[in-house]
Length: 149
Image 1 (cartoon, rainbow, N blue to C red):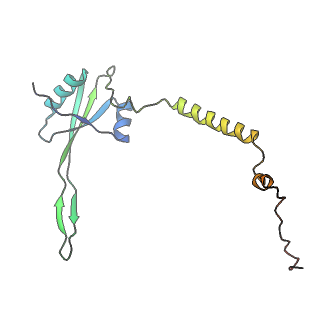
Image 2: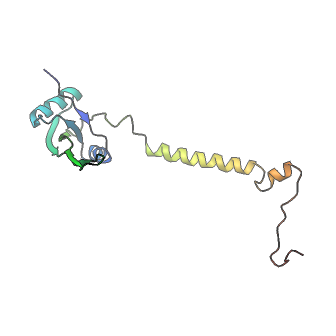
């Protein structure tokens, strides 16, 4: 049997629906129907498909401008999306490579901040280090009321 090309949609909305509703979003050919999408997902990912919904996304109208001529109006190609809900226990590992637990991200940030604070306290005070290295004293400031006397 010939397999249908299923391209997962990588978006925040698709990621949220996969986490919350166990629904995955795929870009499918415009000739696809619910039965063919269902069998293709079940075959390729070894999951039980409960529901398939299809949506046709119409192509946007776009203008193309040319020198000394009127703009030419064209259209982008139509596309079709498939929302596939799978059985509660099943899982498709589309977003697994990108996902990193939030606790580790927070722990990394806290660790980095702690290292910076420790490094700052170990160093000399920042103000005047360069002047002291060249043997110069503190910077002289003008007083506002002296008038240059």
